Amino acid sequence: MGPVRWKSGTDAGSADHPKRLEHNPQMRLQLALLITILCAGAIAAPVNEYNCSNIITGGGNVQQYIYDLSPLKPDFNITTRKKPEAGDVVTWETTIAGSLCGPITTKFGADVQSKCSDNAWFCWMELLLREGEPPITLRAIQFAGGSNFRPEPHARGQALDLLFKASETKGSKTVNVSFICNDNTSPGKPEKIEETDKLITIKWESKAGCPSTPKNSPNGKGGMSTFGIFCLILFIGAIGYFVIGSAYNYTVLRIHRFPEMLPHWDFWSTLLAVCWDFVASLYERVSGRSYVRL
Image 1 (cartoon, rainbow, N blue to C red):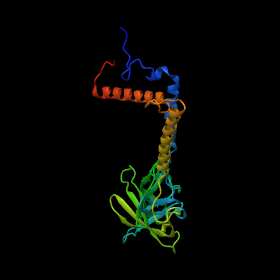
Image 2 (cartoon, one colour; image 1 turned 90 degrees about the horizontal axis):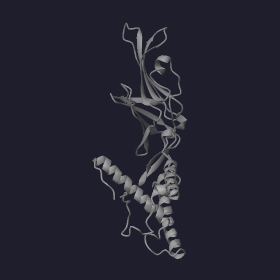
Image 3 (cartoon, rainbow, N blue to C red; image 1 turned 180 degrees about the vertical axis):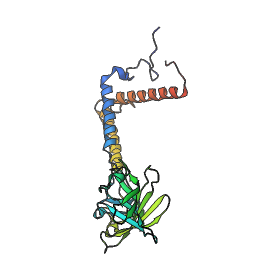
Image 4 (cartoon, rainbow, N blue to C red; image 1 turned 60 degrees about the horizontal axis):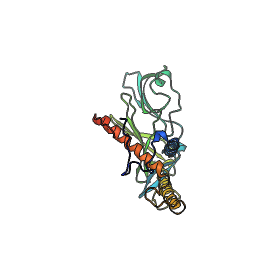
């Protein structure tokens, strides 16, 4: 006795029964096209890339603000020196080199460059200075950076905090750049105001820290995101597809039974069957059970 094939519905011999996917190249093509369209839509959905000339905070019911930090390019340094004590001939110097718009462009010496890679956004250096001699690098640590690193903007009322999270390097610290709006200062000078074991806080008073409001959001109510608009269009398109297709099948092709009146019902029923088989197979593998299908 040969294997009994699974059939859906009360009438196993009904002509309305969908064909198996592996024996229907047309349905396989339709399924492939559907998956391709969905994947293309997901890929086309824009990712919120960081752009220092167009930093947006807020949205929804929260007032939106836009900041342009491009005037603060490319790099900046904050240097602190510890004056030598009486009788001491060396000076201790610490320098924080950073960039707000991308990896640091300054090229350091080999001893620093080996610690702070080409994709570093913040680099901390400790130097030893002797009069009449070149500086000696004692330590260098990459504070923030990486191939996919992006700083995190946070709203503080109308002010902006730009958070650069610590890297995985031992001794690394998170850097928080806190901007203060001053129309009369451009570009201004950053100043380190606090340092702990895990966090360095930098204050930067500058015109670049003064926000503007979006033209399409005068009341501060953020609009729908691009991904949200894409999902809405996709949903409306799906509704239109089923409504118009069903109306065509009902009026032109005289298909009055539901769900057969839905457009391309053979394809959708096959897709549901394939998904059900996949879920059942996955459940059997996870649970360790095995069933004989009829």
